[in-house]
Length: 234
Length: 233
Figure (spheres, one colour):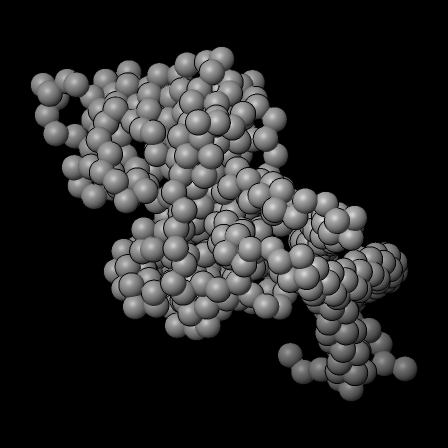
């Protein structure tokens, strides 16, 4: 079809308009998209800075208090010992007791079903339970009388699980001190139900007891060969 | 004047109507978008000012902290606090995580945003990686600036936010996950590259490990004991 001059110019105008509209639309879309990511980055860093500030001002208040005590001429060794005791408690180097939970996990006893991965308690179950307990506000956790501290590994090494550098065999008895209601409800998560299913199907043991008194032993201090206290920053 | 062809009249009219409609809708959208942009920009500036406020406060607090620590050092020296006791205190604070530490170690960067990775890194995956680093004897570990301590819980909140020490660690820009571990560099590198890196790569993620001198920040949370009573033996 042959187009006259008039048609051609109209067509051109229409094309230009459509192109213009299209670009404006794209721009609007782009602007709406990028806005989201920017505020997403700002929120976590704001929360973190606020938290750091909180800790710093607490810390500063503590130091100021200590300085005041020095100025008053209080018993110096008493003060240092008190701090030491506090740090030991935080680090899990003091045996504690209190109300809590006891969770017992054991491999399946039914040999008739043969060797099946689902007959055994795996390292990740234990780790997942620790995670849930801490999340539920546990104050101290142990497994087979090994205190769970900063450095505690739960590493499967074939026939045994290495915990705190020691060989642990089933049954795994996990104990935790804390608010028993909070701890129990924190356990209501995926792995706990998975263990329940495995108990029904394969005969592993998953047992939960709520106790008035649980005793959790002290952890061990470690030496540092590589890490040194930082001079700057927190 | 040239005569229009009859057959063209209908399509041209329709096109004209459609174009007119589009233009008016576009104008309306543009207006809405600019209003939204304005609100969003306002929010952004407010957020930025709150953030910069809090950062300024942070700098001031850090300075105060440094001054106070110096004073404390002096006071301790003056009254003659046992230096062995102080060294023990620092060691304990490193263990409980409230002391920032520096030293040689490895930095692991994991990118799970690649097209080849069908699933993003989960909280269980992170727990496993950290467990392996502990197994390799790491003395201090952090993920995206959060120090790992005994009571650290790593949980998924909502559909994609990962909380470590009850802090969101997701990043919108840069490498999504950065794990720092201080310890024997060769052992850490060996264990991690043999035990964890292959699995991560197999699930399509990009992993890079670098030996570095690292600064690992302190644990910012608080330890509280309400139920646990110390046993005095």
